[in-house]
Image (cartoon, rainbow, N blue to C red; front, side, top):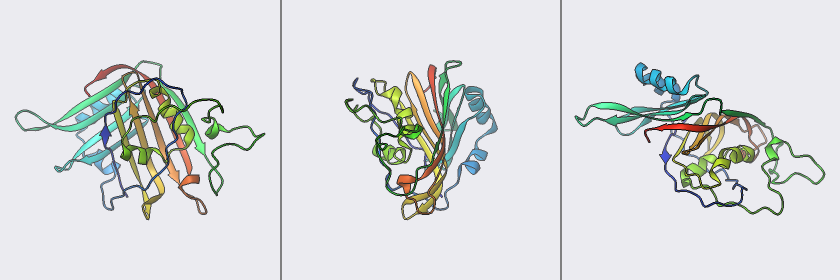
Length: 250
């Protein structure tokens, strides 16, 4: 089992066509014996959790994970009120504290799209067969004459995790960042079962992209049924997008 929640900052992207890159899944790191999100969340101070929920509202997606050598816990939560991150910090007098960073959403701006991705076994098709009607998982496909936008600027480790998402979910998360909006936060978390470096199941998966104007989130679970590979894994996901009204902290 494993849990990861690193973050990075990314430069702005030049204005280009609106066809996003579809990233490919790569091998993932798993740490046996690592504390899972439930145990880590229980270690967060109750006052900190109350401050988080005061900013997010009813929580739609969340995780907590150990961060740093001192084994203190970082918590991340997302809800209709916005995205909130509680990160361990040290005061000037060297006493421990928490730094809360938030992306507060404009009321009524949050949109949600449920995705049930159930491809058949065998090689995943990149395009629908001629004469068929694309399902939701294929609606990301661009018109034949469209130009590809440059890939969003996220780290190699982030791309490794992001590439597991169905292509349609990848599009939904990327769209607000294809016109030059800077990605200020890239956050993710997964827990699951390892099969020689490739997950057979991701029970808790969340990926967040946050910019000055929008936040996008994918949260759900993945399983690789018998006879399938990660290329044809089955997903149950909710994808969210909201407009940022105010930023607090980083």
